[in-house]
Every structure is written in C-alpha cells, then in structure tokens.
Image (tube, rainbow, N blue to C red; front, top):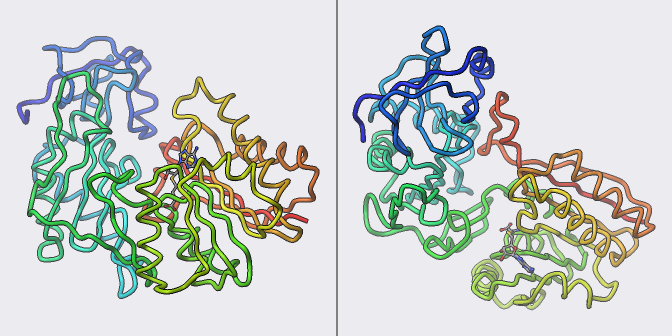
Length: 395
Ligand code: SAH
C-alpha cells in the first residue's frame, strides 16, 4: 500500500481550489491518471502544466482525492506522527484534558488536515474511524503514530470503521483493537461520568461534539421541567440534573441507548428520582405530551445526509420545532440542533423561524451554538461546519 504515489494530472485551470487549500479534488477536475490508481492509493497531483500541487488519497468517487499535504511529502509513520502531534498539542494548549475531563476528539478530519480520519480519546483509549480507503490502509501506521505521541497516556487503540468506510474496494474492514486489548468503559466530562458504548454505540460511542452545549444547558436547568428528545445515552439529561432540574424526561427510540442513559444517571445521581427514561419514538412522544415542559432539547439525527434530500429535511426540522414550540410552557427554553452537514446555518434558522411563525409564539434567539474547539472547521473547507444550534426563549 505504501508504494510510490501514482500521478494524477488536472484539467487546465482546475488547480484553483488547491491554490486556496481546499482539501478535496472532485472527479470532474481530473484530466488523466497514470498507472490507474486503486481506491485508497496515494496520488501526487499535478496541474495541466506539470506543476506539483499536492499529495493525497485517491477514491473512485465524486470526491476523487482527499489532500494530505500541499507541499511535497512522504506519507509514512513520521508524517502521521507529526500531524497527530500538532492535533494533540492544540488540544492540550486549550486545556481540554484536565482533572475533570478525559474525553476529547483528537483528530477531526479536514479540521486537522487529515481528511477521512477521526480519532476520539476516552481516557487512555483512542477510537479511530476511517472514512476513506486510504486511511483504512494507513490504520496501523496511524496507531503507531498515536503511541509515538501519547506514549504512556494511551493503552489501547480501537478501530471502528465497519460502518463508515466506502465499500467499493471490498475492504472487508473489521472493528477491533489495533493496539492493546482493553478499552475504557467510562469517561469523565466536566466532572460527570459517562459509559462509552464503544462496540455497539453510535459514532465512537459518545457524542463528544455536544460538550459545550450540554454545559450551557446546565445553567438553564434550575427548577425547570426538562424534556430531552433524541437523548441517546442521556448526555444533556445528566447535565440538566446537575443544574437542578425539577424533573428530566429522556426519550430515544433505541432501547440500548435508553438502558445506558439509565445507567449513566445511576452512576452520577444514585437514588435520585427526578429522572425517567423512555424507549419510544420522539415524534410520537412529543405529539402525545402535554404542555408541561419548560425546557425542551431537540437533537435529532441528521435529517439530510445528502444535498438532494435537503427540502424534505428542512420541512422535517420545521415540523418538529413547530410541535415543540407549540407545546413548550410560557417562558420556556428550547435547545434545538441540526447536525446535517448539507443544512446551512441560514437554512436551519429559516426552518426554525417558520416553525415559530407556525406555532404563533413570540420567540427570541438567545444563543447560537456550534461545534466545540476539538471539532475545528478548516477555513478552506467550510463544509466541515456541521453542528448548528439555537437556544430560544419562548413567550
Ligand atoms: N443528544 C445526544 C445525541 C443524539 S444523536 C447526546 O448528547 O449524546 C440522535 C439520537 O436520535 C440517536 O440516539 C438515535 O437513536 C435517536 N433517534 C433517531 N430517530 C429517532 C426517533 N424517531 N425517535 C427517537 N429517537 C430517535
């Protein structure tokens, strides 16, 4: 796999986005390829005049190349070590890992100049996810690089790519340990403990990206009745409890997630009867709910995974938010999110605006939320901004 990169020549003028450091090359920009690169191969990219532009991973797809370096570079263990060290140094410099928190995203794809690669850290376990065949091929080198950087601070690297890899090359990826054989079972975030559902859970086992927003929610929870829809393992609910909520109802259609949400609650607030969890459809639960909640959280899964289903997605957000806005108590607070990459911040705001008008409530935006610092957005790759949230005050 680590043989010499093949060469790829762009059509005239198609290097413009690379001059602006955009990390992808679309298939339409390619004039020709030498020695037919295979999925996951390294390719060197040249402009039509033969000038070197970049090196990256090839994929026979509309995103044909994911750029690893705009300067000539050998992609080997020391390359991965350097990149991972940069990513780690940044997280350390802003104090993300401390006495109260041992979980963070260590590598966020394009945001860390490593397109196709996600690495989350839970205590001394790293969970790696490849979204391209190239990163899949490099997984063992990357695991070594992680150890080069983290040394005794890491005891295992778990690979979890079965569901994230493109299948064209029949990669037959299997989830499992690349290093070590045991994973942390719980992690601590802002002093709260959470079970990490490594093997069967969503993403890498936990939604790290909502950390700052959960923390904000805590400060709005005092004496409120809280409904957490699409709660997964109850992240927002645990913070609401610490914030002094009167009661907290958690709803998710996954009974596995609900079982873990209950355990998370028992771990942090044993014998506290303020919390109840329901393994139910969130839309149905909301439709049947009375107007008894004064804080509602809507954090549904991505309604639009692709651009062509955008219209339906926006209607979905409008309907869901309209129902919540119609039901929330006077003076209530709504935390509402979209994690669809295809939905822009503006579009999301517009659907919530329509929802407010439809519900006929007076609504003010009091916070506009995003993804946290360990999920950085590469400024040359605005597509990387996926998490959008609004906190609304409803009269
Ligand atoms: N807020 C959570 C993450 C939510 S992810 C956190 O901070 O950890 C979205 C969740 O929506 C998933 O757990 C998924 O199981 C759930 N889900 C998807 N469709 C649903 C439906 N129709 N009703 C209820 N939950 C649903």
